[in-house]
Length: 300
Image 1: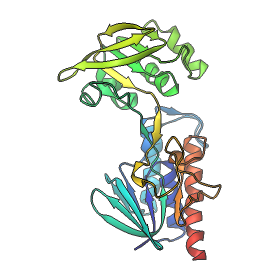
Image 2: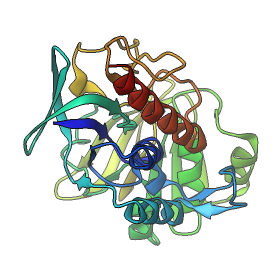
Image 3: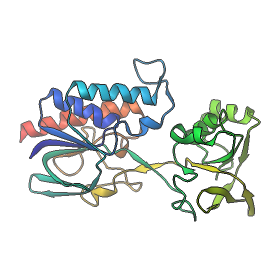
Image 4: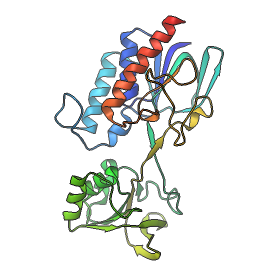
């Protein structure tokens, strides 16, 4: 029986773990990986204390902090379900069951998919969701990026230095990314933008070799070897079922004290209803959640 289990080890979960250790709680961190979305972020220019730092380097600092505090992390393990009976919360994973008095859900966000033919079948075979991770594989070939926000434009700007030609497929009539990113993309002769366009199918047998898009009612074929899907994120919280209250997008509702509507269960970071999805905000929310869990146990 743990005092606390923390699900997730992105900025929120890591910070919650550090604060829990400082409070000498008996706790465990369960996570698929350490760093979460930060691993996929190229450069971070708004994290206090660093003028600029890559996502990978910041995650390295996070991991060093966990090691310094001897935080126990079960990496490569994901929650698949939750139960609460009386004061006991049971976390179910693909590898076992764990009981705890309090729980912090800090599982972050998951990539949204297009839901078109060929997408699932060709994941890792030309379909990718992380330009930071996979862009170097597509050196000198034609690729597509699907989306029109900051994530999509960040992928485009990374690929400009790697790919031969980049097609940007955007469902809206105008890009929604920061103006400075849009300006850089439009200035590159490698980038072709298709507005008011949707992906109809991703093609290929063993690997991606093309895609079909529809623009203003007209079908068009694009010969590409890589497709980066950057159409947004959704809270990674399906495993909670109906145990805690969630919003229409799946986010877990919390109050200003990181509390859900279920006593003893807290949420922090991008999985929660806190509106600003920023690394530094997630870290702060993780600290709040750990302190709230500690205070809850003290009151009990």
